[in-house]
Length: 490
Image: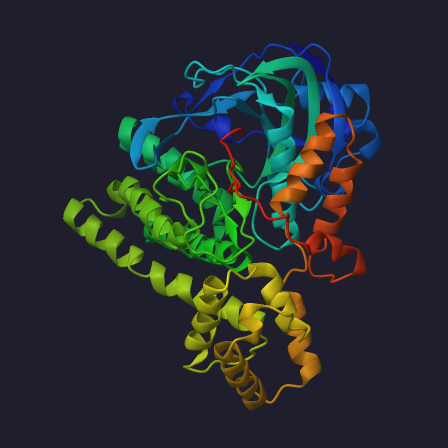
């Protein structure tokens, strides 16, 4: 492996704190170079925020870094070890096709992991080739950037390079590597791995590391491990409430896909709902709907229980007391989640204050949307601009009755129509990454045309702008007899 010296001229400013933990937590990696790397997309705004020189990143040497062919002096190539419950079954996992190349310190002093995804085999690959195909890497780029635009905590995508090497899946695909940025890649499954196979001291070391990195305000508390659990519960309740309120379905909420930092991670079989249906599942492998839209809050709580179990030795020396502490903390999840969810939903309907009947107003609308197969996103846009279209729901007596109650509720709060509309515009995205639009962009990219994807990204970057050009992207796909399916290709 050759090194790029003076990489700080590009803006690379690495620190590496995760390797201060014992090598039980990771494996150092020497990866095989790819044959002919080519940078095909760079997230210039993100790169600027991270402190990079854009022109230097676009250079051939920059491409060599993004492909893993050259290592930055001062960086470290490590694959992180973790475990996780996959569809309810615990197994040992780890970065099977990803590696952490360093922790970038930004001009503002923030710390972000820089990870290459699809970079090749690691000790955790479990027989896989460690590589990734172009379309899934671009898909993660699109969806993660859309989530960022929506204001939802997420890992982000810095760059995608084509490797020039084929990837064998169901057929031959173009190989690619995604450069991913995250506050960290520490997962619930990281704690499960240490709890199951490590020592008490290693579990304490990991918890202390997370406290220092993500929750410095509580790192010196006398009950810091209990407070760590509470902080993670709060961040996950907030995160998933945001998913629900934009119709996002993660698709594979295994405990290794849930982060301590509260960021959305691992965009595999994820997608956004068109028609509102709480039972919606997109993942081809989720045959029983474990991770359906309606189950996401339930599965978040289940995952938090598994995380809490891994912390038990730190919560109290007496296991029974530790279990009670964990149960007390987890019991707060539903209330925290609901408080977040209904607050967002009130804003989506232009409600500035709280009334007891708000829950029924929201639920009744959702029930009608489900009954009449109305589009989730566009229904709220119609209400925002008071532009009720011709459809079975809008023409029904039950909607007219609901609309009357909603208008009376708006009048009681004493806010002007302009203020109500402003709140709703800022709470209801005009566009989401519609599945057919994402597929359209990926098909074009596979044929060498990135313009379709770039136009889509531009529209998705400001979803609350409500501009004229966004109207085209709010249109629904043509009716199909085949339900949309996503796959664990990322």
